[in-house]
Image: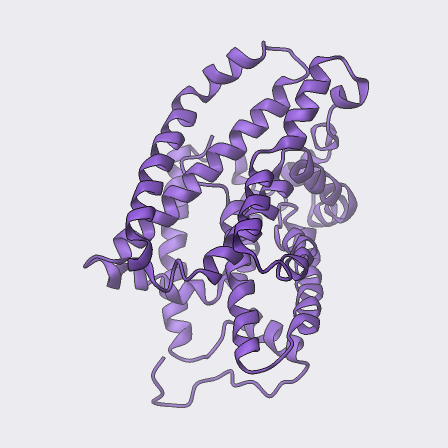
Length: 343
């Protein structure tokens, strides 16, 4: 289990929040942005599909297709109902039902998910660039979608979409003082749950089902989803707590890379895939965990520095500007800053 929440939960929560910001801004201007938003997601799907050719773990494709549900969620104006629907998603009822069915011996439930039969990994570790593109075109995408569906990730992302929308509507981030007490109580509870699941999750799983049981993988994935959700809650609440202290300037340094997340997400694949994959340096099995951690920390610092340098000269990241221009179907968007302008 991860020390930090998985990237899919972070992306999904931010996606729901950004949807609110986009739609709320358009509504304030008296613009119906629903059609443009759907077109925006189609463009994101194209970017994600191209990115998925080199990195099969791409999440942009999933966000784009699943994100169309936001247009339906936005029609639900009752935040309590949205929250309830989100909680139902977090309960991972489909996984629990399948675990029960597998334990009862139903053949459909005991079948191994498609992603566990994936035999194309050697193309990534030892193949050429052409091999990587070939296996990722179909097999890699099927394995990715199978993984997200079978392990409850898609259900969890839907819940986080709704949660992000509710948090945006209620001003959870724009008026943090209003939620100080509730946030701190939530932080304490989430930290306790996260610690419990982290240290005792395997023992809890052993109590529920023995090793070798057909139900065990599904219960394990449900516990993993709950662990990620608890850790994400801790991260969000703790970030706001720190942001309200004298450490705010330090956290504000993350704003610049946050404004070019799409560029950095795709860009790091272009940098690191040739380093780790077989057609490049093939270091995927040569580095220790400590070495990999240091590489990640250095890369993270480099991205922050690059983002600050970039926004001293440009208004948007390169992919962000292309996405914006294509969404608005016009190139009439400022890109380069005028000399002497302040970022």
